[in-house]
Image (cartoon, rainbow, N blue to C red; front, side, top):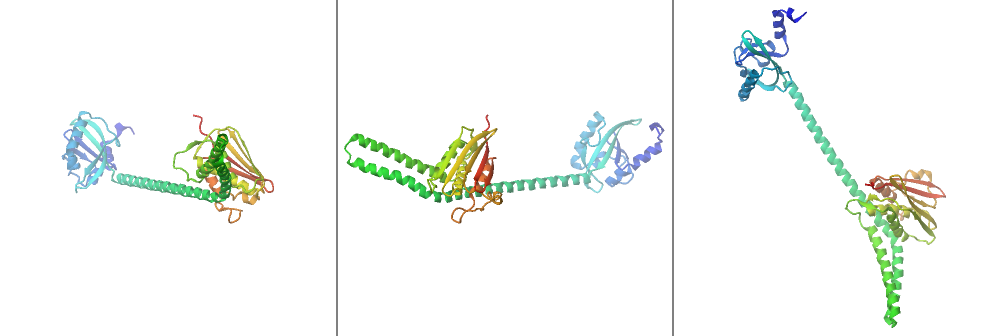
Length: 389
């Protein structure tokens, strides 16, 4: 059926039966037609809206603004589709204010220009939008709260880890005391003897030689105390620094030597120039010290400990190999667990290797262990190097 064949009666039936409200107004804004859906929407009877100004359907506070909108439409009577930003508050006969969406289309008749408005009550849609908006706001609040909780938990984890690191350091200090005392006492006796010799010596040349020796041994004591103090101090709160891995290895070896209870342990250092890493220097030194000390204890007073450093692509690789008793296969998966230890009750709390692993992970590194009973154990540590730029 072509549009020209549609009867007037059929058109009137379609307009009246439309589920959307349809309103027709003349150029002066007087209502000339309203279908059943619009009358029911606003609560008016069949003839109550005819010849009334369209502003009767607009809240008083918006009536003047609507007149300007109507005048603008009459000046430029273009079609304005539904959903093109034409949302208004409307008012029903009983004073209820509700939101509506309006589409406009101009029309020409023998009586003059008309405006045909299609009106939809969007109260339910607005309610759904409001619920969705509130739901989104609630979700955002939950996400923000959860993010805060995770941040606080991470800060607490870091604080506890710093305390564990410091606790492990202080526990190690106890094993170093005897070695440090030996290193300090020997040069002290030399200094004392030379000072006594100077007191009775009349040869100025010998006095000068004794003075040089006193200065040398005093510096040796100062270096020993400095190394121990640097190791014992808490991790700094400063930003990360460029760390010379080889220098950290050497410093850790110097500190570890103080815990040697036998001269039958040899430490061999095979390091080559490698790029720096980004970390806290004292924590990197503690990683190496804990592993070196672990190897020394594993060799039970006799053996060779080998330490090497190399570059592998964009990482540095450090290996610490001892020729100790090795570990059974069933222990390999547990050595990084907190409080796991195969030592005696007075030789540690089982936190050393756990702390090592946590520090290595902290700086995006990796640590693995290989061991064979009766042969020894090898720790391999990988750290990312500082970017070239």
